[in-house]
Image (cartoon, rainbow, N blue to C red; front, side):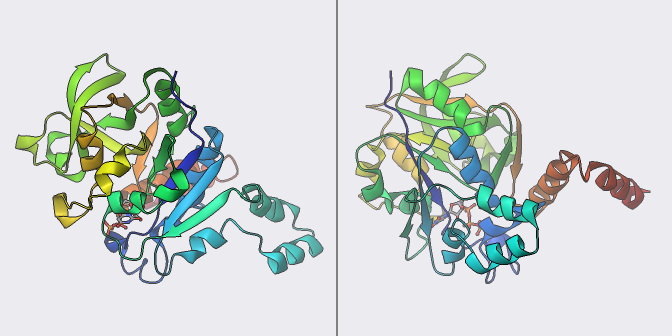
Length: 290
Ligand code: UTP
């Protein structure tokens, strides 16, 4: 039985270059899907999976991400005095308990592995989760919970995966699969963004991880990998000699919100799930397509 996972890292220090100019002064992870920023979906997913402590790895201009989970006294007072109960509730609902949100700074965005390494002191010597907020998951049970349920049995390192078309392997960390029961794949390793001809499988990591603190031993070396960045994939790959490594097929809908079309699709999909607006959205889409 693996140790319980209590802490989650949210790396949010990236530059979001694919979303410029929107991300010139605004964090990509604050982009809203319908009316909630991406970061809030990720925090809610982690909380629903039983995570207790949330650490944001932020960078320059990203403090707003931490502020989003703090009180806004003037606004709350104003909403209260105007009787806007529902709006006020939507703010208070987003608030984790006091003392549960932390942030560390990644001064230079040297890569995802480096961002995770920046949170090493906060994690200490226990297994932890990593969620990339620009991967938006819609599922019951929540994406991270699906991983945690398997982690309780197998321990070690786990990533959520989905099968991607061969021509897309160079966008993802791709698993080198040893055996596969159709839901959980035991893997020998993982390669970051391989070209289709070099990809060991079509199982791609979709931004949810449960990791053993042993990955920090590799990250301590600060070695660069694909794209000249310090890659989390390489750290996981380097620990497969000593730790089990599994990919768990994610069951649900996934939206790559780091990509413009993925982000727009997520907005439509989430809006269609909202009873108060679904009909109007459907009508608007039908009119646009006519
Ligand atoms: P991405 O590569 O998708 O994000 O990293 P990016 O670099 O911000 O976006 P583009 O490609 O330039 O458009 C995945 C996640 O890892 C974080 C990002 O903030 C994002 O949430 N990240 C990435 C860091 O925190 N630090 C890094 O050095 C790199």
